[in-house]
Length: 364
Image 1 (tube, rainbow, N blue to C red):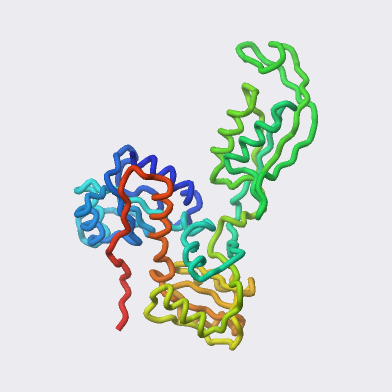
Image 2 (cartoon, rainbow, N blue to C red):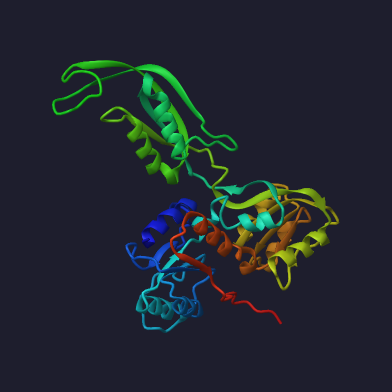
């Protein structure tokens, strides 16, 4: 199987268009047409991880963090990034990263930590703007259900906890087939009037092409009329961080001890305890201080993330606890998530999670 086939599947989980502007998700080194021998999954790409891949006979590394964030102007081995890229090229090891593209989906980076903490009724903490579109098309009466079902199966029609959402209104459409056309109904050079439904539904922007293709394949017309609108509505499945609730409230110290055990954190830096039970939990793996105010506005009892600066702890304002478990510690389960996703969808090649702990932060 080729790298391209695996990448296509990965990007259904973590669509590249959802990555942040500063990010560099995607295939960084390699060729999509290359046949896969073995896949190694790692949190970061380091020289040790590359050596591990070579020893295992893996020619593809899938990481969470990309090895290249900014542009490389030279490749002379003067730093670990350049040495890693040179090693990968010399040894025909492809490098793929699913970073903020995976962070920004509800089933992505934060999923396993939320599950391990026992969160329920999970939603995106900060929904991403401009992530939804509305599509409108015009369908002959007898083909409404066929076209509508095809669009649903391609991923359109989700609104919150509901799917297969659409609206159809009856009307009359006109067209005139010009010479060279092959009209489904009607005659060349004669204006035709056809009873049609105006069919409209909603879809995530990143699956637009899939929905359009499904719609056109199911539609009887040679030329399908449709409109696509950008809408202000936000998807509850796309965006940064997640928030959910515990089945039963627990005291603060018990929750923090459990969080420390689950993440394997050497320590948890946190704001002052409030002597109130914890029920509503917000979290964002990695550098999530930008969501502190959003978590507070959402009335979370605790917000879990990494890389919180000194003055940012003041932003808790005794309205919630801010808990910094560490960047690596809060995102480490991404490797297991990617492993499970690949194993579920492919059985034709070996997949292994790296044994190399790439966390650069040590504790005395």
